[in-house]
Length: 115
Image (tube, rainbow, N blue to C red; front, top):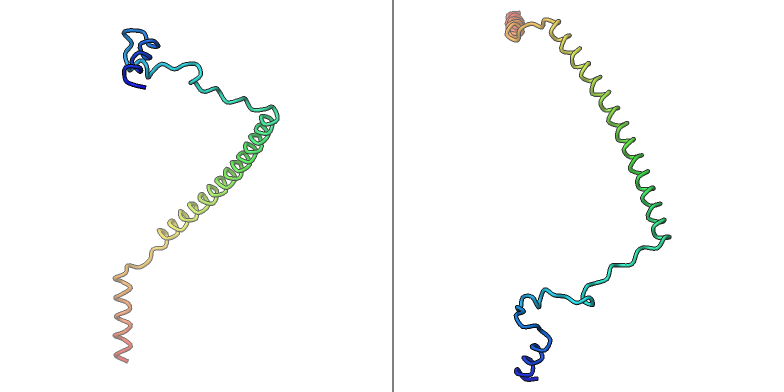
């Protein structure tokens, strides 16, 4: 087809005053894609059953995690109490000063060298 024939065909199909950008936007009913078919009842039931199974698994895992968390919290409290008891025991036991210990060891060495 020649250019003039294409122009005549376009003029027959397109109304005067139509912009080229409007031609790109317009779609006929045949161009619009159809919606996908709905799933069958059997597929829906299968998916519902699978969803219920996954929910049950997640619930059991969550319960296990909560049990483990409470166990760890109890152990943490016990360890904290143990630390506090050791700290109190350390404070009550008045250990000699490190310098006093050094003085005593030096005196002992000096005495052993004298003898």
